[in-house]
Image (cartoon, rainbow, N blue to C red):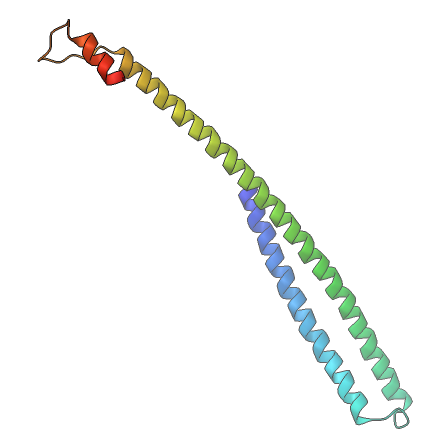
Length: 139
């Protein structure tokens, strides 16, 4: 469940970044158009209609900038969410790993104890020699 949420967060983050990129491009294009129009005419030569168009363009650029800021804030929030999700998943995996490691170690200890407790039989030795061999192997 947590992994699906992580993928959704990453997907939303990618979409927001793409949207912000497209808005940046649009904003740059509009600013460039405004700069070109200012270079071509002086303030004295501008008539009322050109001034109104310029103001409208500047208002659009301002609105695009505000939208871009919102998108960037969303992207930053999504980045924080993804980071938090990844940290949570990492902690969970570390805890699971430690638990499994302890289980394996405990299982191996029990196995070794059982092996030590079982009497070893050898066809070449007699029963009186058996304790001496077991004692030598344990050292």
